[in-house]
Length: 501
Image: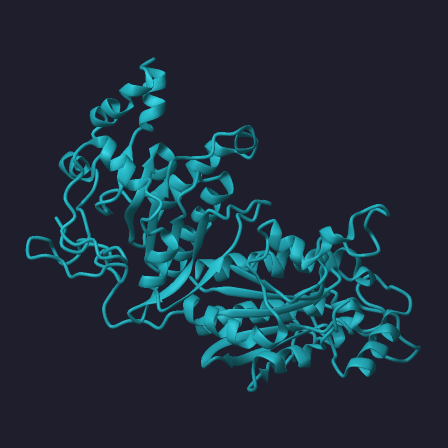
């Protein structure tokens, strides 16, 4: 079990200027009236419509009269120095202002009750009001049983505030401390845009005392959640501040003097004299010296060029294009495709999101992760660059069981509905719908060593019952060369040093 940081220790780990909010009022749920000694006024709401204080909300033994609850709260306050399980306030991390939430696990297991829910709601609303990203340092055992269903309904309140935060185009980064379980994981934690976790933290919906006796303990860890695509990164405590600073830079980019148009920072050249100011210009050239690379002699020559082991892959393009970048991981449905890298980076001082295929068959989780990336970038107003390089979608039985068709559909629709500009560059193989799913209509370019085809030449020959020696001829018939794609209007141009058209 890792060392459990208090809320204040966790805050000090990431910032030096936390200013806590005043917790003078409860936002909702008037306190129940409890019995009082003879001659004394009853506790609870002072008058109709009055907002009781957070302390009044817990007068006596709480909203369901749990015997001893008031004493438990008093002991928790004395032990931790906090008056509730949630703190929130304003802070800066890496020079970026944010609203910061921290859970105090020592206060009744960091559980969510009515007053804790009020504080979470206040934090989300402060973020929206001041146009700030939200950072949550989560450590919770779930809903507070001493408040019964009143505690559980706080999850609905948090969900509603999450919707408002997203609608406002603001980012939420969560850090999962030990432990993060129950409703706190299923709302504040898993509901964030980027989810980081401390090493060896318990992270699960089921807490340690409510799991099946024969359950594999490894399944309830941050590392397991990372392996299955529910956590974006495992971050050691000594790197947490710099990691959060980078994510705040990427997810809350400073406004620019000019609006983001299709001629966006994902491009390397200005629009040509024949293109309007708002038209997309050419993406960055390949990170290798192509020189005056001659057009492919045939379709099969283009295929062989795209499949060449020595040509640059997505990682080379990303390294050449971005000054710094950070990846998101997984489809949030239990899947990770290591062949698709998605994230945000800085190019020429501007933030750009990216989804890049790595040259292998793309699995359903890869398409879903790309769709997740595009939708997040769209909500934040960040332009997107996609790099296309795949022989096609994975077609094995496991891929079908994982929903290859629905996943591809999700990628298509994410790009189709995006309001932010999406620009695509074909850098190698462009195999069928698995490649087209990441291509932006009317904003796709190709390098000289790329090809796009409705089907792989070998598969086309097999369907047509042609012998293997007819595969090259079939490739020619498919008109898949960069020059063919340009003539057919499938791509906007061919980019590369000495070969732009």
